[in-house]
Image (cartoon, rainbow, N blue to C red; front, side, top):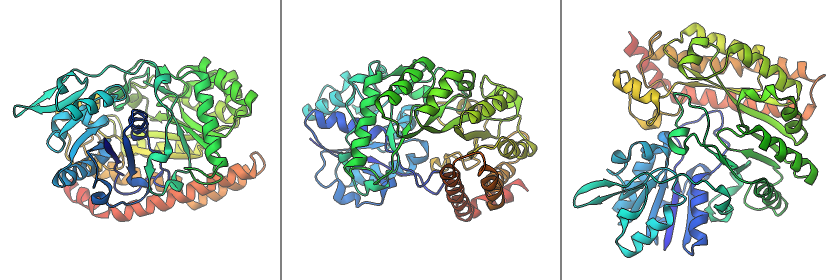
Length: 473
């Protein structure tokens, strides 16, 4: 079949607007291509495209969405159906809300679709057998039928290598090569949708396969291939890359011994600081920065988030990671039932005091499928269900100890203060005697881009912020 996969981009800007890393559609597209299908992938983050022309000869259009892209994904689905195309949707948002998605799509594939995508395409070709496809939602006799949830992929090594050539458009914007080495997360933060999609069971690829991913990345760089020229950067986009510390140590050791040491980053838990050997091997293998979910400087909020760490552990961990020459991108979630305006101020001061390279101050967002969503929905505190606002930068629920306006305004102000040019300059000159100039310049570049994005965000969302201010009166 001719299959077109679409990944809509979220509206507006954020700290990482200029970094594009296509994910699920690339894996599914590669599976379909190996099965002999004609596949094209369109990622809106790489640039606008003509939808009518893109789907002109498609037998079916697949649309992958997360909550902030769901609204746009539904618009794409509606447009495709108006063109007479069959539409299937997948991703975390529609997995949590399949009935909603079925208002726009002909089919919905819930959960990990790696094992169900080919049986679904098979059934589509035959026009029958849909009830045998795990995780599929479809219409039968005027009613929505939900098949049982598909099982998790336990052997990730059976998944094909990602084929970047399937992407149509300006792939030079992919400046960081995304590599997935695991799925699942052993933790269970109340606001996180990861476990709802991928479960608690931690599954990972074998060491040699991960090294092959890196080799292919190097080939892309060398041949001026599908990613930006001369950008030797890898991002391990596992939800918790270091959950199995023994595995990461062995991987880093092999990276060093084989000379496969691109500059790399990943998402880590702060507990890596308790393992000096791990930190040393990560740095030796050229780890530049870790994205760490610190979440809150309020001990009571950490408890509410089910985040099993203390503020003191966070500070000790940050210091230890810094001592090993690895930078930190700190991610915080503001707006819990124990947070106040003072909490927000303490957060940006904490980030500065502990010399984090960059931050994201995210507004607590009730993503469908999470405990946070269930609780706030039950209490009637969700005030806006425009999914395009569910990007963790808009206050869509009513906090307990401040107004929505206060949460919105002070969170964005905290970002602006952290990324202030004065602080960036002071931090740059203070690092000249302790850090390589190239590393310091990289951080400056990140912060300046982030500040520009924040200013754009404030301008684009002035009306939204003012509406919250008016409502708070």
